[in-house]
Length: 383
Image (cartoon, rainbow, N blue to C red; front, top):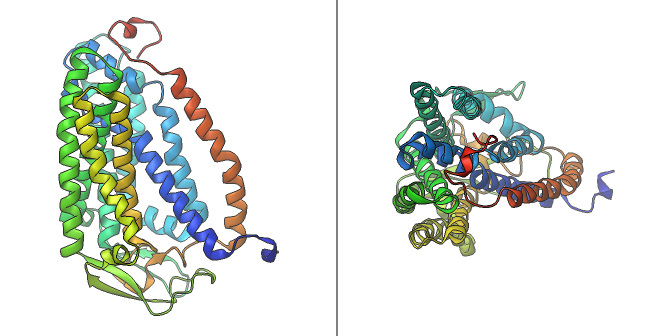
């Protein structure tokens, strides 16, 4: 039956790796501005009406943006089952913290304006900001831990992944720096959106935030890159790489060397485009938002986010989840995937359904186009 599949196993694995990268970037761009708007809420709004303006910028679209997180998680579960098992068990407490933040966020949307009491509303506003900040930080810290390596092994008799770390061990210096980069990046993105979609004092404050967070994102991202190149150990496969065999993470040898994550840039110089786009996109967004170019600034911010996300994936390729406890059992694109047939069937389903999601999303944003003003939030349908 597998002989009838027009794509070989190696090609399908690369396609699904690229698809995962696309979905992670889409989530960071689409749901990222929701988290960014929540993070900068106290910085851009002073009065209750101004906060309602901020809420109504993302209120109509935040639920649809969550689709990208669900699809990304589904791809990890279906295409990379070993990665799903290890990541969601090893990062269990961090995932629970993230889940709590993502659950409380819609409650803030729904309950914030149910009562006119100022203390009631300020409490929900503070909780909304905290949810955005925590979610952005946890995402970045998780990425940082993947880069430094996650302490896991496999039980040889059952192939069950065993995580050997603890919750507070996730907050090492480099992962914390990645978390700060994530917070600044999403705060920049949310501020750019608010500068584009609002008017008056909210837009003016959002422009100041976008400039500050844009520059901070570029500077911290460069510092993180220097740290990776000169101070962190990177992983590389030693010897022959078997890309078309059945998944078995125990059948390889892995070397750990300082600056090892830079090897791909020497092998494929073209991928320097990704980190360059990350830095240039953040700085260009900061410049354009100062010129009151709303849509171009948002596109630049989106390009910067995509560049930063893809820098992470391209630097680690072919690794998906390196193991700091036993480097030889690190999960890679070549030994952590589902079967050849499963990847092919899921690819057909994805080619049919993903365009529908993208077209519907585009239609929703077209319907919801335009600025949110203090006058518009006076209608009965506003948050």
